[in-house]
Image (cartoon, rainbow, N blue to C red):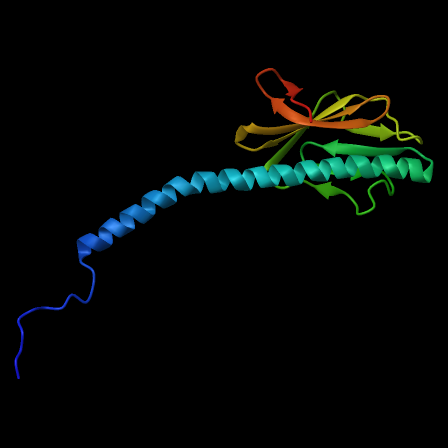
Length: 162
């Protein structure tokens, strides 16, 4: 029986393993900020849809029930509360990563029996620790039209309405 002196490589060397681990960690470090930004955008979209749906539902309920409907925006609790049956599924709480703000002294929006309102109100939704990610909703008097735009903190106003 002949034996050869050729050794068979059955694994990776330590240097090869370290190179692979370093490449994977570099790729992971590049992907994590993008992943976090995508999560923040998704939470902001969810919060925006929740606020728009709440406003529209309160407006519809005021018309349907033939009585005024009032929504209260709570900055501290980050929630939207409706007066007696204005929000059919109850109060709505925004995701933890989202801050709620509004213009004016009061966070109250009241819809009349025709779905109209007497208040011009801008509602600002922004991702905590990322003021670049902000949306602005404007409720316009007298018709209660809801417009969605982006918020610019530098000029403190809503821009680029859809």
